[in-house]
Length: 291
Image (cartoon, rainbow, N blue to C red; front, top):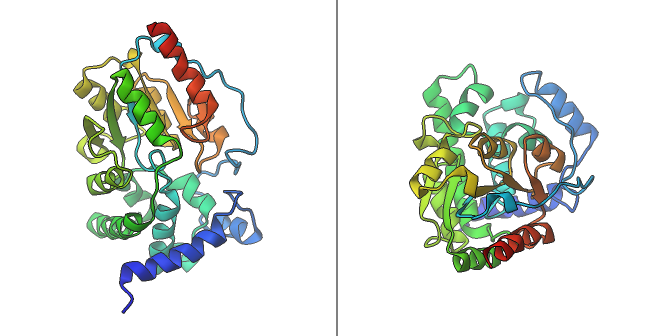
């Protein structure tokens, strides 16, 4: 008998092939109609692929020398988990009749849900629901995500090469996420980094989650490192804003979100993955300064 998780997984694979081709953000009449029906409560941004219009940004981080720590977001940064979050949201929002039962688009997910804290989304997506009902929805959504993630996710290209570099340099490291702790721990384990991070900071356990700086400030304090000697990796607009607000430069991964949105949020520069030459040019500078 096919398990619920396996059934979801097969549906996800079909959905993935339909909705996530080489061009990340599709445009269609259906998408435009869907966004119109969602109303003015959500602010639209230009739908630009992360590779559509490369933006030249200076990739030097040498002013941080001596570099002491690197902080990582988890979802979408250590692994490309956004397609799984999108699928879970799409299925469950349709089930409860959100947007008249019309499935949300990838563009809507990217613009309004990706990287956001669930507690904030309770009032945005379900303003007429009581808070406990909304929280139960997100608990169920995260459980569905974890079922899919346990079978699907792989590390972003170059992650373990970067891990080796960080360990060789003797740098401190922390993971900082807006997702629930069970999600973060599962993803860290899935990409084989369980013994890598010195601390995992969760938005739920701070006074304010991203885009506020509190999670990053908590991580810096725990590591006993100044923001003047650390930087962060992020993939979402809210995450970039949080890192910048904490006083750090942020290197953004353009895995799913539009490059222009990440730059406008304050990213120092955007990389394709952890093997991107721009990143390694910046890291080699630290080696030179240490000589």
